[in-house]
Length: 346
Image (cartoon, rainbow, N blue to C red; front, side, top):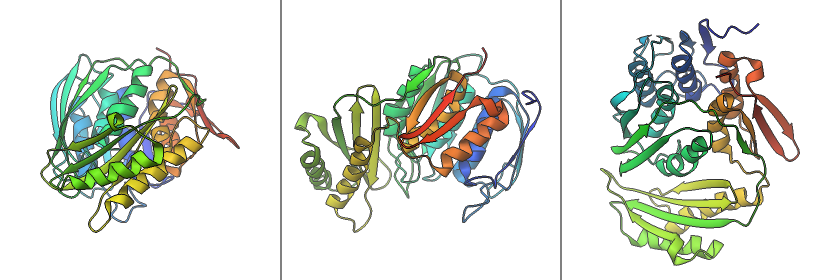
């Protein structure tokens, strides 16, 4: 029988062996009040152990749940957390590099949902990082999905943090209350509607203009739905985001500029990503699928995605380590992967 109350031991070598194992384990341990030990942290990465963004997530969770933590150091490959009770309030967490502040936010948010009151949290670090969900995805895809599950959380953007300078800043406002409304996103219906943004900081405005021209031609987007945004940021950076809506399904893809990479190539990358989602019959994209796994286990419901990654498979195993094998069901078929959950008792 699954022990819902005892300590949990997680092997960081399992599955894809990356930072998601640490982040989700921290979230669940603090939310459920269960002692946690994680060994072999990020064992399958070129640089194993805790990097700055992971360490910030550890300290953030420990602060919010007033927990006792050991092993909270750079490059640490093992840590323990004995959580207390999550407390609402005002917090400020800074990564100190271009490491993803968005991933730190996604780590601490589930804990704040179990807090004794509302919270306001300032996050600083990377907001537009090629290796993590950008701020726009958090604001316009992930949080709206959580809202469908009954979660009351909003974010306010203040400053962009591109790689390698970082220095971005945004504010999270959240009310307590775990995901509790069943989430259903199995079918994708209706015509695709597009909206695009070309975002840049400390770079010529012509770059974004050229990028939007490519996206507008690809999808026939009107000028009123193609936005050129100049962002405040400590360093230079450029990104193209395309948001697609099909009925209740939404996806947002992002491509990032780089030195000596033509603006047209950046836009073409975003267009290719957008077309892949439009051409799929599945309403949930690869990255949203991964991020829905934890809240779905509490709220219940189901979703269907076209790409099932080792990242998502590993995430399912971590959630099951805390909630039991029956917490999530994963069914693979020719028409995609369906993830379903009965939800947790309230």
